[in-house]
Structures are given as structure tokens and as C-alpha cells.
Figure (tube, rainbow, N blue to C red):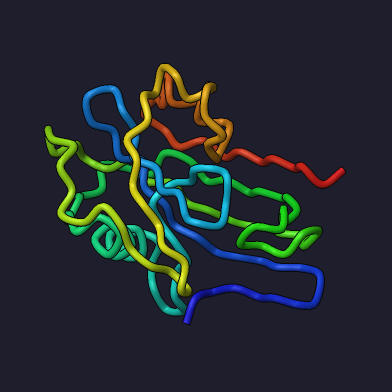
Length: 161
């Protein structure tokens, strides 16, 4: 069971996600219902570490067993659902651990699609230098991926004002 709490108008989600970079491109997912791209990853299960969760999610979604290089970002994200997968106006609070994965030297995936909650997802390699041309989340990747440094960063974004 994923670590999340949902009420009528609010949702909290505990998530782990991967930063998979190969040849200047970063791997994103996109589903049938939403207009934007998002990172490969998903909900952390009760009793599961974020490291175990990110390895499990990456394997489930790509068919490839990537290894973790290090924790890059902890992101506290406050936003509203836009009517796609998340109900319009739903106030969301997401806590996500982003792990930089060790490159494999190839963009070949064993699986290019998966299904989550009955919704099909597809994998896309987006060029890091052109991320601003895509509706890709999290938006802070546009700036922060240029220099991830040796230590993780804690980032808070609040789109509910």
C-alpha cells in the first residue's frame, strides 16, 4: 500500500523518483490523460525505503534495473490538480526523493510503456538542454540539472497561493 492520504479536497503523497540521464537526455514518462511529462517513479509503500521504491518503480516502468548513484533532491511540492489524472482543484502536497541513477550508456529500454491505475504510460527521452520547450515536471530540473553538485538539495515549490 502506497504512503498517501486522500480526503475530499486534499491529497498527500510520499514518492520516490529517478533522474535517468543518457547521452544528454533525461527519461520522462507521460500518460494518456495528462498534457505534461513527469519523472519515472511512484509511491513509496508503507515499510519501504525510498531507495527500494525508486529501484522497484524504475524496473516496473522501464524493464531496466538501474543502480542508484546518489540522492540529488528532496522536493516538497504544493500544487492543485488540473482535471487530468488528478481532480481539478484538488489541493496536493507531495514529498518526493529524487535519485540520480548510474548511466547504462544506452537509451534502450526493455519496456517503453506501462499501466498505472488503468492509465497507460509511455517513456520519452527529452534533451536536457531543451527542457524549457516541454511541459515537464518538476520545473526546477531546467535550472538544477545543469549542476547537481555532490550534495542533495531541498527544494520547496508552492503553486497554491
